[in-house]
Length: 359
Image (cartoon, rainbow, N blue to C red; front, side, top):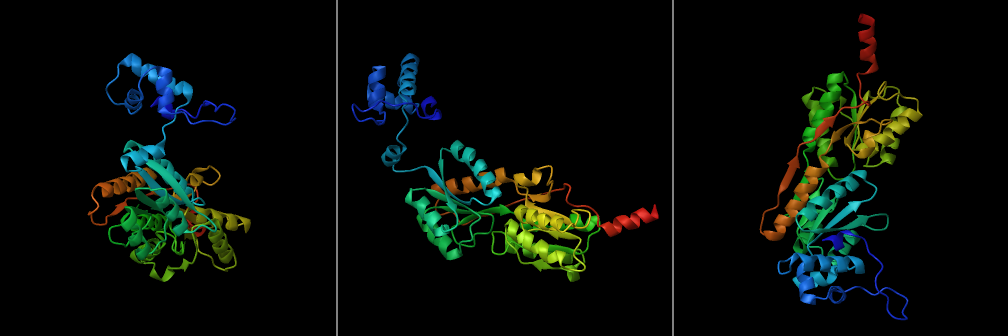
């Protein structure tokens, strides 16, 4: 509806009160010279009014700045038709996921309500806020909630975990196939000539355990079991800086690093370049996510892309389908990733020197 798309307009004032009074359907009906029932039909896009009357009512609603009372509508229909999304504001990937969630949810007739995890505000508080606002289903981005908490949530509202396996009955998960993504990254580095490939893991972050296991498996598959090395980390820049500082102090550092995610990779490159170690001249770096930062020309990060639009669509559809069919078993949807090769990976310098000497 036109009136819903526009922002608030100046509303009528209470006599002598000096503050805005909410415009009602009765106000629209009085201005348009029709009944309130007819206004309700037109604003809900129902049949029953001629074109001229419909135009007159919509124009009156627009001029008065009428906005639907969503709380009243929710009470009237007994449903909120709202999906609650929990996210971490520090993760650029989550912001990109939310941008993809909105149009899909709206296309299916649902609103979206956000609640963030932040310092001093843990997952329980973030989720409690969503349930308190009567969200019908929950989509959890980057959640580290255990199986018991997830199972408890699922009793209150259909729950979808994004980024890892849920591991709880009746809870859906939507994620990237970590094994495939990590294998692509390791294969790329090995084919460039790297053998000493280190992985900075994501600690307890979502998907970290799977990526860690996938790294070890990919290295073994390439005959590099003796070169396996995992540096404890996290999904942030500080973890990358700490790992980079550690590697700078070593006499024989690795020639390539697979970071926990793009943020970790950025921290690593910051530390290495601060120590005058060239990327990719001396150390190649691969991230994970393909967040918008990795695209910037001065970063140009080789990374594993997660398809945010497909992940968002699957997550929303899982939530909506479970609202309609509560007895569905828990589903685990794993989507294929894609390695995006940019400027932070190259053959190790030793290989380049050998090639130059033979030419």
